[in-house]
Length: 410
Image (cartoon, rainbow, N blue to C red):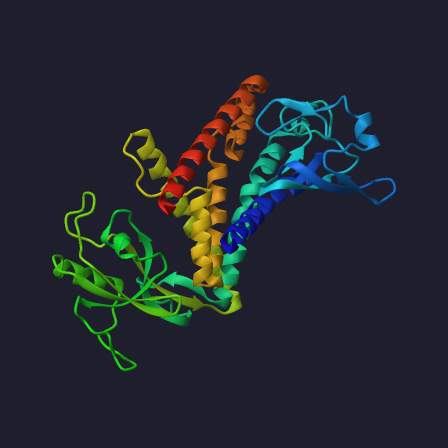
C-alpha cells in the first residue's frame, strides 16, 4: 500500500509540475484557461474565484453554475480531438478528479476552435504557442535540477567507480550495489534483488564471520567480475547486505543469452553517498541533470532504432506497474535514493513529451512549425486524427508494457 501511495504522490507531483508549466505560460500569453485538473475525470469537485465578487465558488461533480449554463452553446475540444460541451466558468476551475494518475490543463482554443478570439490558443503567434507547448517539458527539467541539487546538499547515491570528486564530501563509502537483475539468470533464481550490497565473494564453503569479526577482503565491482571470470565453473558464496541484515547467497555462473562467458546476470555499480556545500550542490544538480537528460535521449534513440529495425528491446522498458515497483524499492533504500528516482522519472517524462510524435507536446509543436512552413494551418481534422492515432498507439504500448510488468511480479 505504501508503494502505491508513494507512486501516486510522485507521479502526481511530476504531472502537476508539467501541467503548471502549460498553465502559467498560457496565462502569461493572454490565453484563457478553463480548467486545471488534478487527476483525470470523472470530476469529484472543484472551485474557482468569482471575478466579480472575489469569492470562492465551489463545484461538486459536473454540476453547472448559472454562468456556465449561459455559455452552454460554446464548445471546447478535448486533448486528443473531438468536441464536447463547454465547461467554461467565469475563471479557471481548479478541480479534483477521481483517477489520481496525473492531471490536465484545458486551454481555450487549444484544438483550433475560437481562433478569432484574442484569448484563444489558436489566435496567438506561433512562437507563443510553442512556448506554451514546451513549458511542461521545461518545468520537468527544472524540477529534476531542484531535486538533484537538494540531493547533493543532503547526500546523493552516486557511482564512484570513476573516482571521487575532490570537492565531494563522502557520506557513505562506495560499495558494490546491484542495479539490475536479469530474468532467467542465476542471480534471479538465487533471490538477489535490486539495491542489495555485495560485501564479499568467495568459495561456496566460505565462512564470513568469526564472532563479530567480518572475514575476507573488501571488493569493488571489478574485483567481483574478475573473481567470477576466474571461477566460472564453481559455485560462489556472496555475502550481501539487505535492509540492514547480512545474508549469504550461493550461485553458479551460467551462459546467459549470447554472452561469451558464464555470468551471474546482474548489473553492478560502485555506489556511495556524497554531498557538496550548498553552492556547489546547485551547480552539480544542474550539470547532472544535463548529463542524465542527454543519456535519456541516447537511450530513446537506440530503443526506437531497435524497434524499427526489428531487433527487439536493448533494455527493459517499465510501465506504471514497473515504475511503482522501482519507487517502492528505492524508498526502502532511503530518502536520497527516492530523490534520485524522482529526478530520473521527471527527466524521462520530459524526454518522452518532447519527442515529435502525435499526441505528445513535441508532436503538437511539429504541427505549429508546419503551419509556419506551409503558411497555413494543417486542416484540424487531419491534426486531430494524427493525435488520436498517436494516443491510441501510446495506450497500446502502455498496456503491453504493463502486462509484461505484471507478469514479472508473478
